[in-house]
Image (cartoon, rainbow, N blue to C red; front, side, top):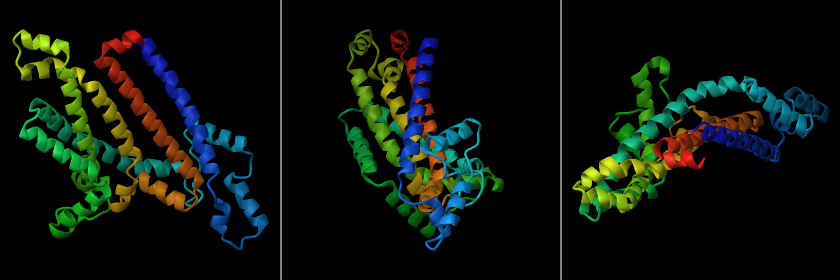
Length: 315
């Protein structure tokens, strides 16, 4: 098990290094000069050079990359060009919105998908199975931003059960803050729940067709007993993959939902920073999100080894 974990740690480190180089180079080739954007079209060249020097944009690519990486390793993500505020403080403020939103949406997705997928697999070919698969197909097909706007229209404007947007703040209390995140979390969760339920059903059906399940049935176990005692755990490996990918998406891919509900999270901050050519914020936030994605994948790999001991033996 220790060799398995160490191997995954080496892979994680290499992935982070490659990702940092790619992110830095891609942001550098984006058209637009932050200094020119901040000073306007009529700025003098000497003024632009002075501002570039102040912002740390005048060095070579290697110098700027090294400064950026070394700063992040020490917890210094740089200073925003636009707000003149440490990027680490901006990330910390917004992480308390994006991370709870992602966890809330993932919890809802899992709570919906697991019972739906297991029920559909246990009733294969029945009306229940057909109905659940039809609903999941609809959930996959509907864009989450359209569903989000529909929920705002129904639950915020017509019924007035929730606010149409904004965030109450954690200082207002746990329940007011969670109420502000409920509609965005549902909008993010339902499409993911549809995907997860379909994967859960397919994985369970494949597992139920294995020889050891037939042997368990021949020994007298009912279909339900074979499903819960033997099939479910072995069917979790592809499901864990999807959960890991979904959590990564929910952290990094909530830009549209955060804009629909005017949530001041990381996704909205990236969108605003791109529009303002605030490159240091874009680089640092995207790198942080990549780190979160790779870390989640590392956790999923460890979960694989816990669920399936054969992976530890191969490692």
